[in-house]
Length: 298
Image (tube, rainbow, N blue to C red; front, side):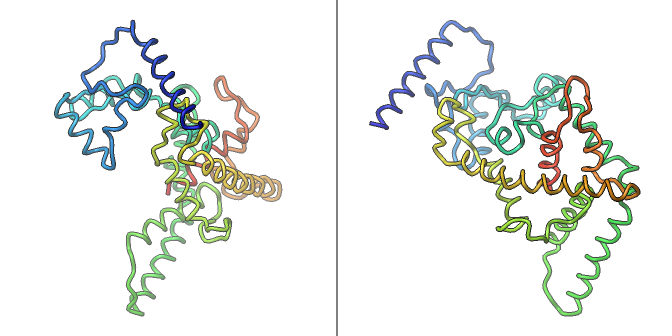
C-alpha cells in the first residue's frame, strides 16, 4: 500500500508539473526532453562528466536539461564558459537551495552555499580581509615558521630512520594545521574532539556535501529521505555545532583574560556579534556557518 501511495503521488505530481508548463513558452537551448518528474536524471550515471560530454556532442556546447524538477544549463566549450563565468557572471553567480546547505551549513549562511547578494558579498569581504589579506598573513608568520620547522624535523628523522613518507599527505596536513591555527587560534586536528576522530568527521561532512541528493532535484519527496542522507546530515550538524560552540566559548573566555594576544578569525568575527552589516545582523549562527567552511576546507 505504501508503494502504491508513493506511485500515485508521483504520477499526480507529473500531471501537475505538465499542466503548469503546458502554456509556458521558454527560449531555452537545445537538450533532451527527459521524463516527467525525473527529467534527465537517468541519463546521468556513475561518470557525469562523460555522460554530459556525450549529450553535448548531440545538443551543442550550451545545453538545457532538467535534473528532476531543476532546470539546468550545461556548457562545454571555452567560449560558452566565458559567457557564463565572465560576461554574464552576475546573472549566474547565485547558488541553488540544497539539503546540505540547509542542514549542515546553517540554512546556507556560509560563503559556499549562500545565495548571491549583499550578505554573501560582505561575508566574502570579511573572510578576505580578516584571513587572507597580506597584513593578516604576516601576523601569523611565526606560527607558519613553527609548523614548517616541525615538518622539517619530522622529515629529517624519517630520513635518518629510512622510513617511507607520503609527502603529499604531510603537505596537506601542514596546510590544514596552519589554517586551523589561523582560524581557531589552536590546532584541533590531533585532539580527541570527536569519537571518530577530527579528520574522519570532517571527511564525512565533505562526503555528505558532495553526495548527490534526490531531494535537491525533486523537493516534493525530500521528507521521505529515501537514501537516509538528511538523517546523517542532521546528526553531523549537531556534532559540529557542539564543537563550534566550544571554540566560541573558549575565545570568549580568552578575550576576557588576555587583550594582547594575536586575534584569529574567530576573535574578529566575535567582534561583529550583535552589529549590523548592511541589512542583516551578525549573530553566532553566522559565525558558525563561516567557521564550518573554514574548518572543513583543508
